[in-house]
Image 1 (cartoon, rainbow, N blue to C red):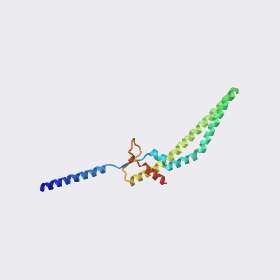
Image 2: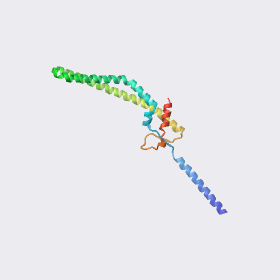
Image 3: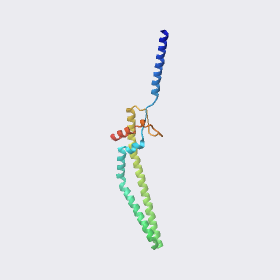
Image 4: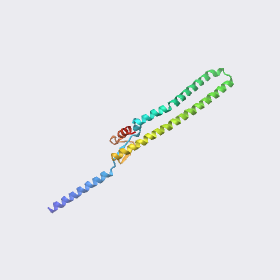
Length: 172
């Protein structure tokens, strides 16, 4: 009986050690989540709102540039047709005017593109700042240890993108 008791005690100690070691191992594993940033930016209402805002803000300038490009093309086509009947000095003058007009058109188009890109970056940064705050809130509320935004492969059960999009669409 004494031997049975010591074997039972030994089994209890081994079982207890195994349970404690399993808990220690479980505590070492981190809870991981993943957010697909591209998808979040495509599907979030704030992204669509920002796109509409930018279109409204830049549509007038874009139309002006398109109109200037059409006018330049028309003038260039007319010059091509009429150049054979012009004197050399008229041809050089018109050619110089077309080159100046083209240079001005290129400058305006470049400035427009730079301004548009700058505003897109501003809007994107605001959305990303809000999204990152929401990701942090979700991580804290659901006790995640790590949230990844870039990965080669992610098991779909780790993807919390839908939760973030839902929270982002609900937050203002």
